[in-house]
Length: 331
Image 1: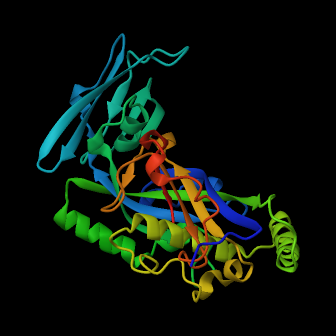
Image 2: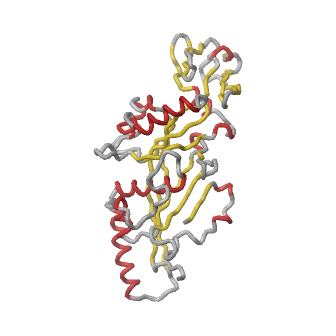
Image 3: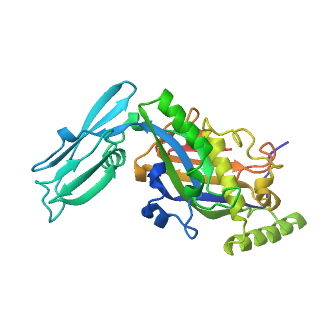
């Protein structure tokens, strides 16, 4: 049977609008409480791991330039890397002091006994890289959403007692002590893309499609689509695409016409759902066993039977898209 496309097709695309790199002990800090709240929630979180980075206090100095030395653990080996910085405008740090205690994962800089910086070593080093070395690629281990079974809307509410996170911490500390466990908190904004077949004449079926798309667009414009279901299929699409080792649900069964967690999208005859995300803003390339490291990742999944329905974006051939655009899949 030849694949078909409706007279009018529409797709919901989830665009990553915000991403934060943090660890579990950061979740209750006021900064993150301000960044993510009920008005601007974290929708999705990633649990990732990457090489341990520490500061080397005895090799840091404040002279004409500021020199900070970091140690990166790769297996049983250690790499030392330096970054050189100019003094801040209108402030000379020649008499500054750097303080850090074992295991040197955090440090403070004090100038004239006043703390001017307190930061995690890994975050500060990553922020000041001009190029991204492959050994700092981060493995994505688990994907979850901020909606809990008891109605929690905050990632901190879920992650503070998250059994999978505790399991990952335990296994990484035993099997990969050279790694650190980190979290990505992500927010998404949605857009709707619509295509019209301007070459076909009108028919009863097409008139019905026009009525249906008018209803969908009205719901979309008035923000009436079920938010929980939108986050459900965003989480499902991310899991299907990345296939993190600690996820089970959705790896091989998304999309499914029988799945009730995103039934509204099925009932509204939405052609496809997609996500796009770019992590170069935090200098982080994500990878899994099935996805190569890249800053940019985008995928579109046809909700109805792939054998019968054309994807809204299938005019683009995956094999013809340059790798410089990132990882892109259309299914």
